Image 1 (cartoon, rainbow, N blue to C red):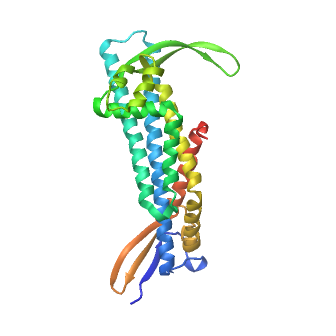
Image 2 (tube, rainbow, N blue to C red):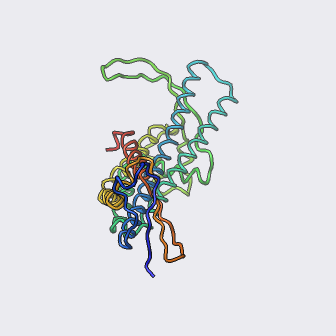
Image 3 (cartoon, rainbow, N blue to C red):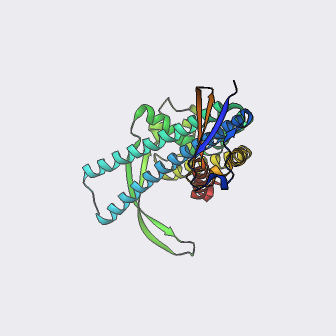
Length: 299
């Protein structure tokens, strides 16, 4: 008995006969669409995981900015207020470090699991992470901080409020109060859970108290470079997946919010339903654009 792959959608049109709305797919076409859907799913996961890392970094920096504003309004803080501030920053930092580790591990797993969908490009994708690890001390330091926080919990030991000189691009300058979350260097150097070579680097290159935010900024830019190069690496798969959707589903995708499902049936037996739609393509396109635009230095 032949297997039928029937197409249905939520495309809004008064008369389906006026457009190009295919009603069935062949088995070969169904296989092509299944692979295209899988590619879109993996690439969405890559962008969404990166977005989580970015948002956690933003939340940490916003919290620091609020503390700075509070310091400007109140010359001194009570010890219990300072303690609350440090605990807040530690919570946000641990959230960020956990999401960064999850990003590194999970996106590698998803691309590796996809197998032939990305034509043997996993080794090249994995190399993007090694490239940034080798290139940037801040990447290695933040990676060490993640290992340290996993076993030692809170890592920010103090916040240092200082007056810095701000310089504009026009050469103007003024004094500004800034708050710098700091980490104790020796706590990292003495932690055997941290790579030996990285501990040596930290001992040689860092002050007794390490300012967190400059290293955080570099770490996030490193992830930006990884994702940017991954987009180029997987561009042909992305283009092919979009093209397959458009060529097989045609006007079913004309509505930006249209959902499409392809139902497999063999007689009275129902098979797995393949779900996709214009929204899945649109949200991936938009998050790729938004993430790429967030950090121009990642190029």
